[in-house]
Image 1: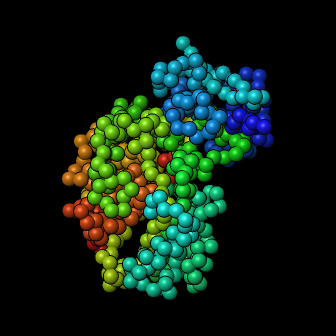
Image 2: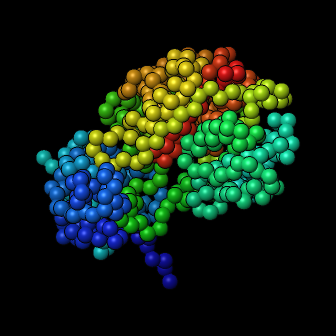
Image 3: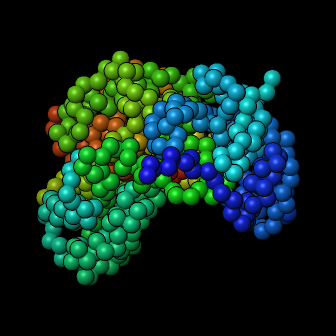
Length: 137
Length: 378
């Protein structure tokens, strides 16, 4: 029996981020807003790193931002990504402030520049939603 | 240190501690402090741990800890040892790092990639793996690109650091990469993550390094020339992911610089030798800026003329560093700083070694600690 092909690791929702990924399935980008101080973030813990309060509300945002930085991956790290080499990796700074790791699509790697305006496009790996970004005019 | 197989991290650590005790002219029973730092194997449970105390048979320790602030730990161990000795808590403190990620027949990338890979990414932090961001190479490529974009830093300028360090390595018998390197060869080395070539990235090594910190009044009568701690500093920005912060280009070295220079009562213009954590060429460039050797954004032009290499005005990473010699996390710069401070650099010994800056950096430029060392008592 042949080995099944390698599968790209895709982030799965946890208790904190279930609404984020559920909205992603519908093509919408949500950010968490701190109920105490109003700071918007992509939450990595239940408490706000600015005011240390608990409690967030999810708000839909524009999905627009700019390329904060990027690189072109040539090294084979994960077998499932091998067919994509060389692929771009980027950090997008959303207009609302938080920065998000993602791939840039719809543009050749050698045309990506820092500061390029982009917008979110939710794609899917299997059932899982994956946020990617494409240039906007 | 290097591609040495068949030994565990603990085996390497015991070897290093035994050699360091003998080098210091001490007996094992003189040692009353032990600070331990596991490398990448610490993350997989294969690294050295508090169990090292038992392997060393040290039953009367007045100071013991297993520390981890990534690549800044080595400098930090010396800092905490120094403070403990000053406070009268201990006399002779061994600081030891050991790691053994390399397996026979395996590549460096596999060794580090496997150690760093997390199964089943979740939540926001999992978005990185979901986008194919793997390993430290990725994080530092992103940081370097940001600097290049903001300040016009060039690939030639990063390459100048690799070339200068290799020149030093040719004179270091402990260095892994001892063939001279040209800028053309640097450019020809394969991409790992653009803008980082293979030769922008550090080696991966098995091995251990141990350093003993002792009271100055005793050190002067011990067999080796003592190296004195004149300054200690730390700065830790952590990992910011928000607009307005720029940890990629303005690192924890800035905070550490204030403290370490303030304590030593000197400035960057007084430093004779730099031993800077060089997991990547870019780390050296941004660290030089953040210690004020040049202005922010001018690191590229600063290093381009070869001043870091042999015969240059700011000898830096005089053993070849992590790029060309050996990768023992923060012990690479620290061990070379001690060798230069003792005046035991042989062919590569710098002429003026009165003040030596030795730095450690960890995470994705997230953690930083430094020492100013000198052959002269404070």
